[in-house]
Length: 109
Image 1: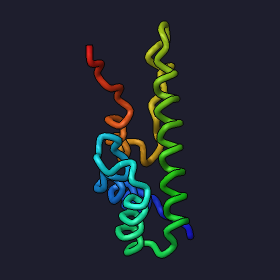
Image 2 (image 1 turned 90 degrees about the vertical axis):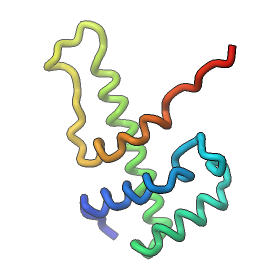
Image 3 (image 1 turned 30 degrees about the vertical axis):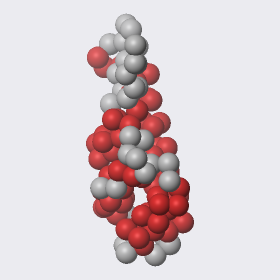
């Protein structure tokens, strides 16, 4: 099952619309059965093979983390403006909503 770029963008937007799947602040984030059920219900309408679709989403998440890390590592001290990496990956902008997921919590002191 091959996905086109448009189908990947659709998959990302469906994933984004379900914070239980990606937002650790969501009260049901750690409920694996609930997440699996939601993933199955919403995504099976569009794609028949849920396991393959889940693998593709995990692959997109890994690619996003890799691209984000490349951008972060390129801005070292002393780097010129032409040396800073800016991702050209087609889904990078679509997955920017995940940046909130990686923010550290505030301390309680």
